[in-house]
Length: 80
Image (cartoon, rainbow, N blue to C red; front, side, top):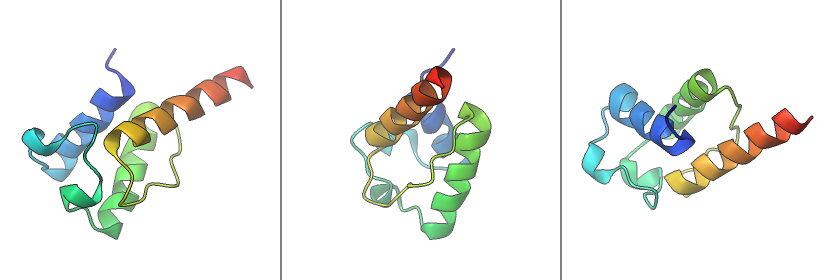
């Protein structure tokens, strides 16, 4: 099973045509040239593929931070 980061990375490459070369854990969403509509779409794709709502996707967030937040949310929901 792919990690949360790998799933998000695949979403960006497959769904948003972002070059795999620029998709790194330290890359911010802004550096990937995603506009506000794309960020909303990304949150929906992440929710669909990972099963967690990530409502606070912001341009300054790194992919590593996004993956860590999604994993923490999943762990929190599993513990409930």
